[in-house]
Length: 589
Image 1: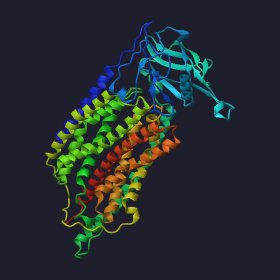
Image 2 (image 1 turned 180 degrees about the horizontal axis):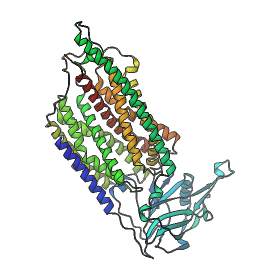
Image 3 (image 1 turned 135 degrees about the vertical axis):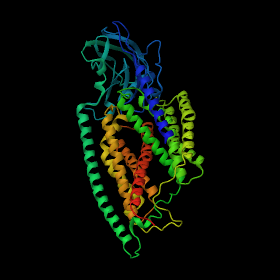
Image 4 (image 1 turned 45 degrees about the vertical axis):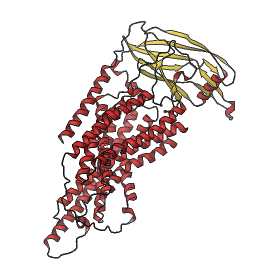
């Protein structure tokens, strides 16, 4: 335990160092009149496919000379950001009126590319003094035209920048399109385009520290989220009261009955959960895999807690590009020791001998599916030439983090777990011959039990899942981390309670194979989350195409699999605590 505490302290210190680095690396964003304010063009893509993004200058826009690429952080590369110097020069406090950025003669092929992009609602994203803004390529005039071939396609050529400042700092930027300045790109002939821009400066009294507030969730959206959270809390309270009342009453009657049977002289055959006291702590089948799953679930739970700590500290402020992905990679590597320690220690408690094989299984149980999924999706991204394709150098960095940090910590944690010499605490002795499990009705089989165990926790969190999906797979910004943390706690409690209740009914039916059943029932919420992905994709989003579909279902499969392992470990630990408690309360011969 001391080594485990030291590991947790090390992860916390490393996370705080990461926070300090992020905050110290930010510039003061102060300018004098006439200073050039940095403007970077990031990426473009169809609005409905957030993962299908391309470099800004893959399209024939005005290009700055010389073209300078911004040095990106590790998380920015993972996020698909590819920032280059923008085509417009904006100096602090200097206004411009319809200034020509460049003149371009678009070829027939370039006109066709713009027309195809406009038909798919392509947008561009830029950063001005680290403030993001967006705009669309053009518009489609389809009013009164039943035939799509009769539609007109217009390319916007004039951007109007309205910049708000407070003394020597930029506070806000709004970009609008001049609807009168358009170019018809409906035909297949070359077109001359004069790309222009206008700059207007306005002074406001908003402090610099609040300039990112406009990107946070609106008050009405927060009220909806708080209402859904309140609804989940009410569900939790009702469930807790119901289960506590029922279980306490049933257990009280059981304890009275078993105490009466012990005092009576009649040697009646034991029934119910007491009758399987000699089998309830019989070790599960495939105990190496079981211990590895518990270890991975414990690691994922630790990662989630550390991520919430960083969110509360304020690391993931709006548009901290790649901050979350950087934190996930670093914390995953640093918490590998937790997985190794938990898996090896529990495996040895189950009287396992091949702890090296158990460590290999622990290391590959989560990394294996992630690696296969990444290889497939990155190949698709390379084929489509999108910015989501990771460069070779970034892949090498990830491999080095896994090989030089994650794997050694996993091995060290496994050695510490093996040497902990902990013994499995079982209140009852296990008999040599296993007891036969009586036939069970269909609703007490594994799959129906998993359906019942996963439905209730998912129903308590599905509203918040929608906002998360709309942020991760859309263009909304998620900032209500306090609400998300409350929902996460609700999820854990409901998962633990419902798994404990199902475990009790399983034991009451004299079925002692509760180990794997409790893990599967606890993790079944992850299966419901993946089923919700199909509904969100078809009914709540405009995503389409092989590339976007592969990314959505591929990465969501990994995320839901991670939730399956984490909640499965939570469900088993709650059930183990409950089973130990009830069997300590009776006299077992």
